[in-house]
Image (cartoon, rainbow, N blue to C red; front, side):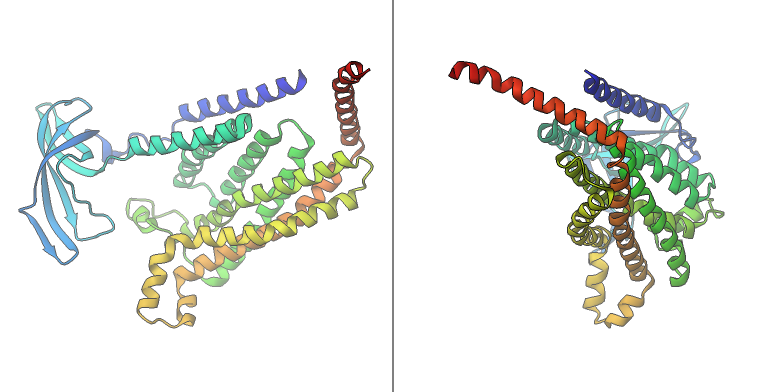
Length: 400
């Protein structure tokens, strides 16, 4: 009964946090750029490319589209919309008849003044993909999968509702990032273990690893002379009126925030392994338990560091292809600011992982071999033995 109450309380806390975060305003809902506009879906009825100028792959000018508005104040109206082409393959989009687009409708008291084609509408496909992810996670992991979905949602909401507004508001990115990471680390591991000593053990190792990564990231970002402008869209943020933001500190915080997920994963793996050893051998000492955790950590670190490498470098494949196509020497490639930033993130994150293994093994070894926790383990083992004996008794009676 107690275990059920603990599981229900964890689920209730998760739901309450999700509701609170959804209701929490960011403070940027009424940004000036969106005043006096309606952002809605629209179906493309026809297109006009007569004002489009093509030069090889590059297209510039304006594409005009006849659209039917599917939402908002002017639902059902048919109107003419413009799609501005800047000559950038990265940002431009071309619409075809039958496409569903996301448009920005500007209006006044007299009606629609202009309609701008924003992008193709993808939210319905995103919801389908998210639904498949949630369904498979719950099917394979049951209640644990449902709690994982909750932690996933809370992480997204925390970043969007707290972290990003705090950065925009001028909060210190390092301290703010550490606090948010510590909160998410505790919460995610709590959803895995609930009210348990394992939660403290895993959180201790993961958070110490985050601190190490934070310190190394700050030191080597300065040593590498990396400016935070290497982050995508960071210059656009400055030009939008946020010149006082410290992009370099935001970049530093991004290093340990990006690596924290792998650290949490590794700390939970090691803690679970040590806990299993303690359950099988309740008389084990903390040193022996710590060595068992270290053995698990050694096996996991090899794959985890490669995971970070693939995660960070995956978005730079096109850049690497460009360097190779131009015949750029490898020493020049390694010295470029963008590549150096990726090397910094990968190696510092990996160093953090390397420290998480022994630190988590140490915290797990000490906390999970304490007298109080061992007493709980002994009671659990005794209860399991009684259940096994009770289940075997009917079979013995029938045999006699």
